[in-house]
Length: 155
Image (cartoon, rainbow, N blue to C red; front, side, top):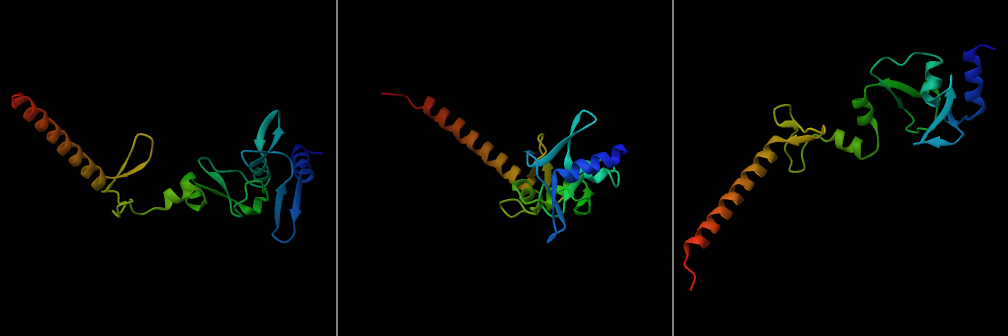
């Protein structure tokens, strides 16, 4: 039996086909929600192993579970996409954040109005400018209050 056929047999032995959806669900223990198995002495994600049996994963792309179920390994239900696209298609807080088109104050995230922080988060330039302005005003008010307190004689 070829290595490819052997891996396919192992995948199928550890999975269950769901006729109603056409999905193939990994039945062994999960790691971070995904099936894992050893291939050539290295632990691999089962959905990635299943996909590469039929087609390579292009460089720079990740596999998106079209059925939104990480334990499912049917290659027909997986699509190579960019990390950004995968995040946009997701259902978690990261996906919600990626889909936002406006900041919490309602300013649109445009290339001109959006800055990217050191950690990769988007930041509204209008809101950041307003925060900086408010900070500078508060600093001036504090300095003036300190000067006034020092200038007034006590007693």
